[in-house]
Image 1 (spheres, rainbow, N blue to C red):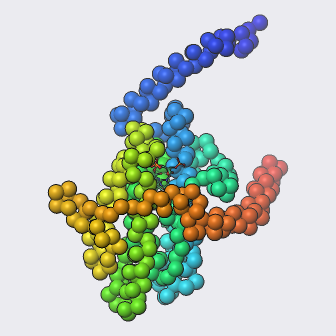
Image 2: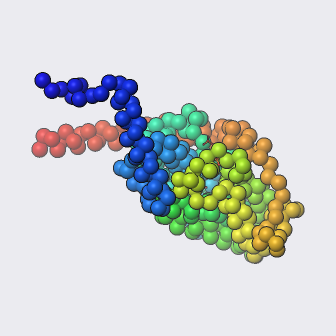
Image 3: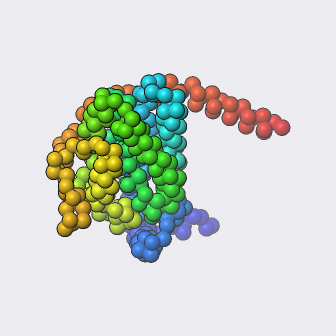
Length: 333
Ligand code: FAQ
């Protein structure tokens, strides 16, 4: 009698056979990465590559969703109907980005429920920037200019990420973020050029508060980046944290001149020899405090997300009940 069990080698031998197979698969995977090929959801990939992607994509998705909160705070207080419509559209875009990204993470075998559970339990990270408060209307323009500006700088290289479903999601996200950055800049430009002295002061105050946290969005310095080298090796990150931060500073310093605002760094200066701006030290203790859950709004942000999830339970229940009813009807027909 031939059974499947009889085909199996003893346990130890099986392990060696499997690991030899795995070594060959890994070699092929690394060769494909070296060729610059894209990896699709059904392709074989090492566990560590999969986990790295789930970690980064889920953090990214959570950032988009939590990122709706600081801006949502100003929907009812936008100064004109036009600005309110633009803000609403922008916030909806961020929600959409979160959904594409959760879908991209799901292709790696982790469900959206699992990802959200980790967020709500305070185990998953999201971008440090969204733990700062939005104190005035100028904060909204400044988020568009600086926060979306930093997001695009970081995300354009992700359109060439080796994991194809993430790269594809990033193409559309980057197009929308670019519109967001321009609307923020436009909103500030109007205040700076046509506004009162008080409005100009409001813009300067917002820029003073958001500048350093925006620089922290790119993550810790390269020497302290835990995942940076491996993610670069795998073609997940194409440009390092420090190099992206420098590119952002160079681009933004020129935009600040057009706006007529001062970036709050007395050491910010063009360095002809380097072909880049020099800048002052970043307070990394503040960054780690915020990432560790002790920023100005961490508790409030998490509580708002948990409440939204709990309040929405009846909608999810109703949708599932409706789907079940439809399926039963179809079966009966
Ligand atoms: N905040 O080893 P690395 C947006 C953590 S979307 C919190 O260098 P990695 C749109 C990092 O996770 C903004 N944590 O990490 C919008 C790791 O901890 P772990 C989000 C941070 O992954 C605009 C540890 O530090 N964008 O703004 C941060 O190689 C306006 C060591 O760091 C993305 O997520 C941080 N800033 O590089 C929405 C883009 N930085 O996981 C609404 C995709 C680092 O071991 C309104 N992500 N950490 O526990 C990335 O490109 C990367 O994940 C980095 C970090 C560059 C963020």
